[in-house]
Image (spheres, rainbow, N blue to C red):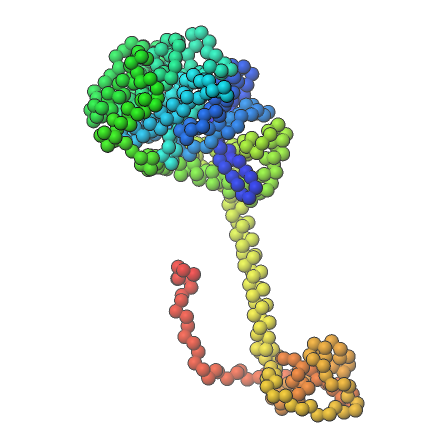
Length: 500
């Protein structure tokens, strides 16, 4: 009666969380009975707080219909695991099967013990315990889900006379007859699951609904040891006691069933840990889970370049749709081409991912080029003396190790020169020039030595003719080779070094 999507919650600081969004089919939105069942599931499951029950985070409505937001369990159903094991002609190991059933029994007992605000028991019965409603996560924990047809004392909807809700192949006989049921009906259903997992065979499934119902009500229940001889007699005894057609002969609760099953499993050392269940799930479903993750990564890669725009669009669409929270708005950003079967993303999605990667690569090259220009400029500043000699043929002035006394300035010459920066800024253009250095010149005076490094600036007499506009320079011979031997080339071969 609903479709399940994958969504995510977005928040500040890069926060994100995946959720499962269950949306009622649009053609059922006008059916009051289905709407009440849908809301009952949300109200009942949201009240159960247990690690072996899939929690309900939110329930709401929008222009797309009613929806539930549930915790996303990465993994698959027990039914899918059984199908994969049958395909490979390998049965689920007995210790793994017992651990999964024990987790499910723990979640069922928490549901059966649910009470209202006045501390009164709700007499909750799941009524649809089956491998399809048992989720086994990649962390090795099994959880019970789907309380849509559960019966409680305070539920909004009620079952009509002669109407059956649940799967016939897992119904208790009293439930199939339409009589009064209690928690022991769920004990019979989970015992049917245990029988099928250990025997690797369907117990009551027939050719049709009539044949299945006849097997549930009348035909003898096969002994587990006859179908699977390797099952220990103590496990067989526990399983067959929970499959008694008379409710009075069954275990009184899921907790009692779990205690007896665990005691029998420990006695024969047939109880797996949660970590071992996780390893088995990875072995059976690892490839499909990896495909699902690739599809999710492709979806995220498409939306990440415009993350801010995506958040804003989700908020706007959520407000227009009447969604009141960030969890609800995550439902709007569900990718239309995502499926749990793990198919590859659509071609337009792949092309968009390729274009986004090319844009990021182009920006990276641009940043690298800019940093290279900045580094070259910094190096040129530190090596301006050598550059001056190489380009203009000038020698940098030696550092003023010993100060010499400057001769008295002529009467026609202005005041003694000031430091280089002031002299360059204050000297008038007609009386300031750059002295050429066509050949090795005698040592400069103290006045010229104090003026700067690389460019020789000096005051010329007023009666001296100005230098020619252009003086051709003789090409200087190449510098003599250094007397010190050159250092050997580095032994680190950068292209071949994996650490560079």
